[in-house]
Image (cartoon, rainbow, N blue to C red):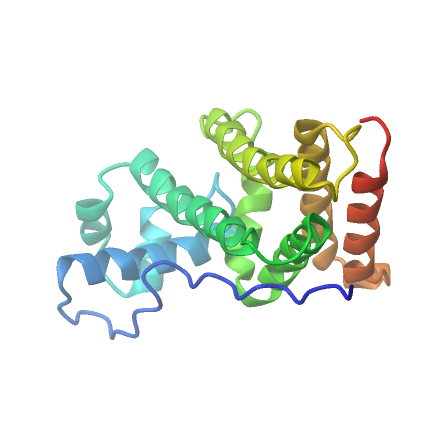
Length: 216
């Protein structure tokens, strides 16, 4: 069976608010606009350096306006991470449907990670930065988010074992952790184009290796 194309990617929550500075917006539209700007600023400057002033500048509003919607730095960071987390959970949700084999679905999920680096680079950059924030208060939340991804992949692998297209010796949780780790590395390599690697082919090889393993 031929490898599937990556599934359609979920749109960024809220969309881009094409507004001029100072224009009055409904509360939810303004919050969405500020989150769009915050996501971009966090992607450019990192979780530890982005703040209310930069986001106000990017959005063309006053600093107090940003504080009105996000009263402190923790609320701002949490809102951005909410958006990033929902993007990746939605990506997984769209991938694991009823069609195709387990291999098809895992390959599609891996290819979707690669496609997201082109279509939603800010989400990918924030995710990669978040994954290294070991000393930050956001680290426990990252571990919980990663577990949600691992559980979704493990469910797909367990379903494949029940249907007979994944060897019974493949342990779903271990294989799922390796899959998420490989997806993370593939996303990193998207920002290192000089590597010369055929990343889609690397995804297919990684999935084939996971599902052929006799013990994990």
